[in-house]
Length: 133
Image (cartoon, rainbow, N blue to C red; front, side):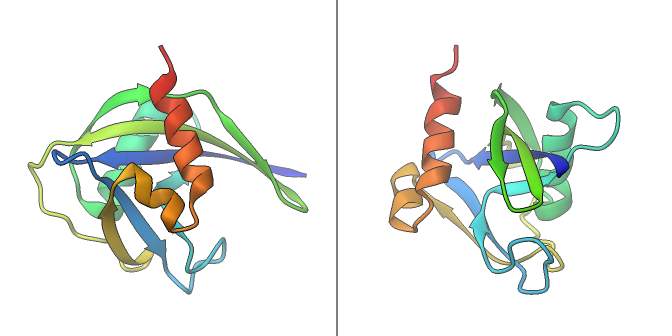
């Protein structure tokens, strides 16, 4: 079983809304799925650096780390995903520019809207993340 180490970057703006991206239909893994900013952690890269880098690459947003969570595990047929949830604040200092190779659309949502969009699993991860000391 192949293991992939990733970040799950929950970006929150000044209005308390969270950024969601709908993955491009051309993406090999999970096309068309709504998700937070995600990405692989490079060799010798910290979780924090990976989260800030992925958000910048996929959205052009400047962010700061608020909370780094404990890893979340998800198994598929031949893959194991280890995702480190990270809560980041959008600093509002750069314009949003979505990487259209990665995503097809975006929206800012309340935490309650995660479940309404069928993303209860993201709402649960966010709740665990925010409950950490």
